[in-house]
Each structure stands twice: as C-alpha cells, then as structure tokens.
Image (tube, rainbow, N blue to C red; front, side, top):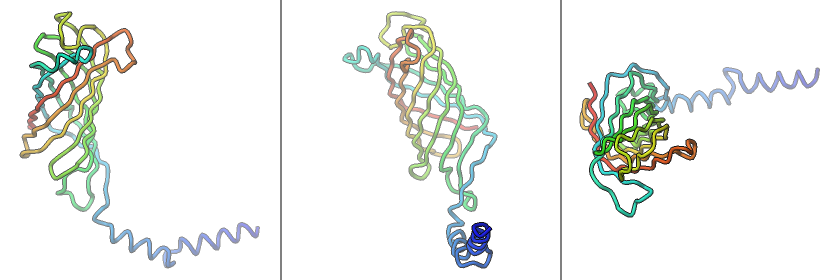
Length: 202
C-alpha cells in the first residue's frame, strides 16, 4: 500500500498539467513545432525513368566498361514519405517508392522485376537513393561479355544521386549492380553499370 501511494504521488507530481516538468516539456515542444514531421502515404502520378550507360562483366572486369546498357524504371502509383507538418513547401526528407525494373544490354540479355527505392534529401532538390530489387534474368545471347549468361532470379542494386530540374524533369547519376547475392547459387550473373538517367513525372 505504501509503495502504491508513493507511486501515485510521484506520478501526479511529474505528469500534472501545471507541474514545472510539464511546463518545460510544453515549451520545448512549442519551440520545435516547425520541426515536427509525419509519414504519409500518397497516390503518386506516373513517373518514367531511362538510364543509359556503360557496363562490364565483373568476372572479367580487367576488360573495363563498354557501351551500352539501358535500365528503365516505372514508378508504381504510391509513395510513402516523411515531410514537415508545418512547413509543407519544403522538400520531402525521405521518400519510399516501389518500381518496376527493366534492364538490358546491347546484346539483348535482360532482367526485369520489382524494386524498392529509398531516397534521402541531401541538398535542396537533391536526393541520394538506394534501390534494391528482385529481377528475373534471361540471356538472349549467351557467352557475351555483359555478365548476364544464366537464367534465373538475381538481386538488382542501384545507387543514385538525382537533382530535380523542374516539377517534371529529374537528372541522375547511377551505379547499378546485378548478382546472385549468394542467395541464388545456381545463377552466376555478375554485372556492373554506370549510367546517366532522365526521369519524367507526368
């Protein structure tokens, strides 16, 4: 009973509306009102992205990069993001998107699948992104030097630094990697890509 009474007294003194502790917390919350954030799920307008670049087979990387490789992204129509509650005009701090991925080299060997993209604001209108996806690889022309020579599932990784030129256009520098990730051991695809991307938001 004594412990219960002590607990009630401490709780009342700490959490009472007029307690000094509560007053201090209220003042701190008021001072940081402009920094309040919230996660929201939005319906996203269609966005298409084309990345063109050079590729190499990592297994024989001494031969260096050669042209040309294409990666296409179709952003699925929803976006989960973190933004300011009271300063809605600011850039989103974090954006999470789902994308459809299509990827092929000049030889016609291709990969396609789905990915999740995480974009972090680093400067005004500038985002650093990481995308991880699961793709199905299909070698149309085997024994080429593009690193896609086996049929099966692989992991598709992508790092991107993008800048929004306007409401509709975005430029990006990208590094892409396809491999089995030691998860799909019967598939030995291993490709690196460096490319420049252009995206259009409808």
